[in-house]
Image 1 (cartoon, rainbow, N blue to C red):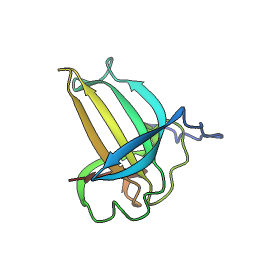
Image 2: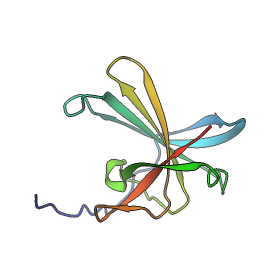
Image 3: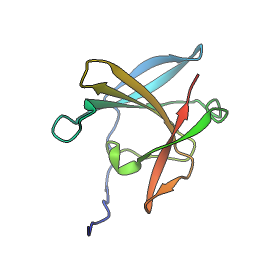
Length: 120
């Protein structure tokens, strides 16, 4: 299927700054809103996006999984190598599936992508 490359001329600012504690350490987390998935997903009704601030190399030690999330799935934000993202999937059954992704240089189907990491 032919497609075009999306070009974003300006990036959005975070909607708010939240605090998240992950593995006993507290981080500032920039909240970028949510995306309604109800019309196209049989898994989740929506997903929410955060970008962690000042986490340095804290997440480099975690196992990288096979799941990837291309940059164009995120709200229009500036994604830099090493950044970590938290994505909450609000499942159809009412549960929430929290996933962590890292921008590690992964390219999937010619698209820059973040890779899921197993945070334990």
